[in-house]
Each structure stands twice: as structure tokens, then as C-alpha cells.
Amino acid sequence: MSYDNTCKYLAETYPAEFAKWLLSSDTVDNIQVLKTELTLEPIRADSVTFLQIANQILHIEFQTTSQSTPPLDFRMLDYYTRLKRQYFWCEIHQVLIFLQPTSSDIVYKTQYTDSNTIHKYRVIRLWEEEPATLFANPALLPLATLAKTNSPQGLLTQVAAAVDMIEETDERQNISACVQILAGLRFEKNLITQLFSEEIMQESVIYQDILQKGLQQGEARGKRQEALGLILRQLKRRFGVIEPQTEQQIQTLSITQLEDLAEALLDFTSQNDLVNYLANLSESS
Image 1: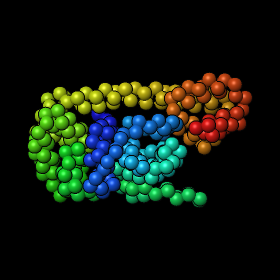
Image 2 (image 1 turned 90 degrees about the vertical axis):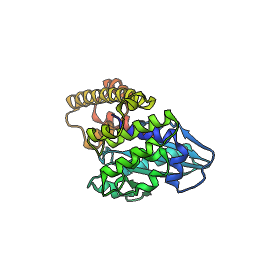
Image 3 (image 1 turned 120 degrees about the vertical axis):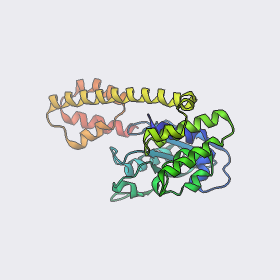
């Protein structure tokens, strides 16, 4: 099940609630979800949400793992520059939300640092967040299952009770489905099914939508990995060892760009042609 899609659903269905939480504002007006097309991998559209609040952009990214190519701190800079290019008049707030505890240093980094650049962003480690804030609104209840607690089972029981108090049936079903999906990151399935009705989860619109998107994205990722592997084999067979930096650039290409490269490489006579092709591709993006 896609935890990313669950978080994306919540943020885009309840944008005002997420904006109030992450911007620490009681009033959020003129908010809209941006269906921004940020080309080039490693933009993961399934895990990222962009909200525009007046002249501000709120970029929210949810992560279940600290592993990323390129690293997450660089990705935040990458997102920022692409957003700023399209919405140069807006102030941009970036929040990277980690769902699962990890000992990786990346979850404690709040900036990308290079020789000429320092880019800052905010990081939330859900396992360190007080649950009271997340209990304040039904939209945040699914995240509360991953919050700080000395009694995880007691916390999940509280969340289940809060879900039962949601009056509107469709909302209760959808929030319940999201709670059960995200709770799977922390709790055994048996405990979750004891506290929540699996039938309600399966009847919810969001469960079916997330399931379908997860299948589609899994298929897309599989096709991309297949294309990437084929192109790398072709290049190595033709030119021998590929420089690590060049190979890393290739690994960040989208499926469409990989398909274009597969056609273009037929005209390459040396590895320099490949390097120049990738440089031109980067400049045109």
C-alpha cells in the first residue's frame, strides 16, 4: 500500500488544515492545491504536495525512508529552484516530513550545503511530535498514529475513538482508511483490525483510489527501471566503463527522457557525445 499516496490525499483534501499546522497560522485564506508539473526525475509526484496560500507556496514532502538518489537535502534545493522559477513572486516554505524512526543522519539535516550554496528547509520527525496537535483536526488523525508516545497501543486506541466521533459517514470512512494504512508503519495488522473495521476501510473511496494509484505507479516504476537497465547495458557495451557522474545523471532521467536517450545513443560515436547530450538536456530543463 502506498503510504505516500495516503499522505498526498490528506494534504490535498484538507489543504487548509495542513497549512494551519505547518505554517502555525490560525487563519489560512485563498488556498489552492497546485498541480505543478516539475519535470525531470527525481521529482516524485506521488509523495509531494504544493499549496499556494496568497503569495506563499507550501511544499510538503512525506518520506518513509531516508534513502534517495540524489540525497534528500539536494532534492529540497532542486524543488526550490524549480518552484521559484515558476512562482518567483512567492515566498516558498518547504517541509520534509519523515514518517518512520531511523538513525540516518539525513533526518536531522535541515539544510543543503555546498561550496557556494546554503539552502534551508524544515524537517518534521513524526515520532518526536506531540500527538495533541495532531488530534486537533480529523485530517491529521492518520499522522497521529506515528506520533510521540510511551504507549503506542494506547495512542492507537485514542485515534480509533477520535475517528468514531467523526459525524459525516464518508469522511469517517476515508479518515479511517488513511489511519489504518499509516498505522501499518508502526503496528501489527492484528491490532489494527481489532480497533478498526476492515470493511469500512475497503468501502472507502480513498482506499480504492490509493490502491489503484499504487498499482499504476508500481507499474510505471517497473518500466522505468527496465528502460534504465537496458540503456546502461547498451552504453557500457558500446563505450566500456561509464563515468560515475555520467551514470548518476542517467539514473535521474524520467521514463520519457530515457526513451529519447535510447534513440539518441544510436548516433553517439564516443562517450563525449553522451556527456554533451546530458549537458544539453540539463540546460534545456
